[in-house]
Length: 64
Image 1 (cartoon, rainbow, N blue to C red):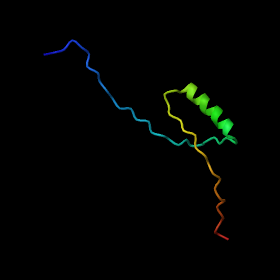
Image 2: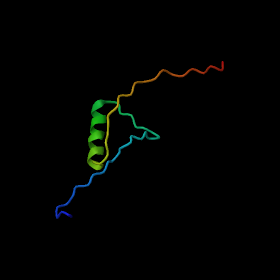
Image 3: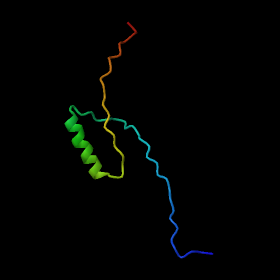
Image 4: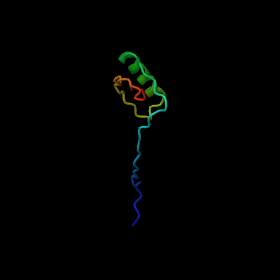
C-alpha cells in the first residue's frame, strides 16, 4: 500500500582536498585568517583548512 507521505531520500557528498599547482603563502597568521574568511564567504560550499608550512632545508647540489 502506497503512503501519501513523502519518503526522505539521502545521498552522500564527498569533498576531496586538491592541492593547487601554485600555493600562496601568507607571512602572518592574521593574513591567512583574513583570506580564509574571504574564501569562505565567496565559496561557502567548499571546505577550507589552514595549514602551517614549515620551511624546508635547501637541497644541495651533489654533482660537485
